Figure 1: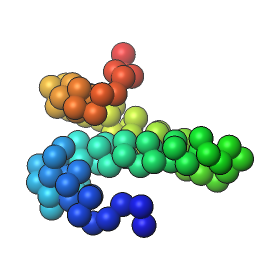
Figure 2 (figure 1 turned 90 degrees about the horizontal axis):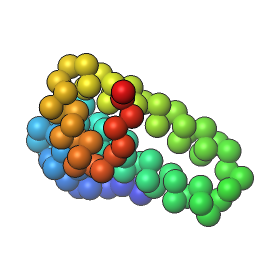
Figure 3 (figure 1 turned 90 degrees about the vertical axis):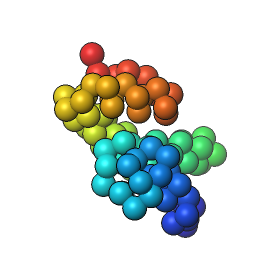
Figure 4 (figure 1 turned 120 degrees about the vertical axis):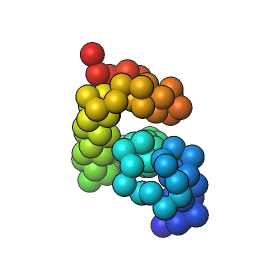
Length: 92
């Protein structure tokens, strides 16, 4: 697999509440962002991989949904994760 358990724990430790807290919204958004970057690189090499393209679109939608949830619940946490991951502010 392209992402080891140690790498996942590192992502959750950096952006979540801890290495074992895999359910935090910030940790999930960070993990989705990493996976989106990986799939985008794959699609640049394999333009006709439509299965991966559909998976990427679904993953982007999930990340957007989590960001919308975080925006409604706690705007400060939303702004912090947007800044940490260098994402655009898509919720207007």
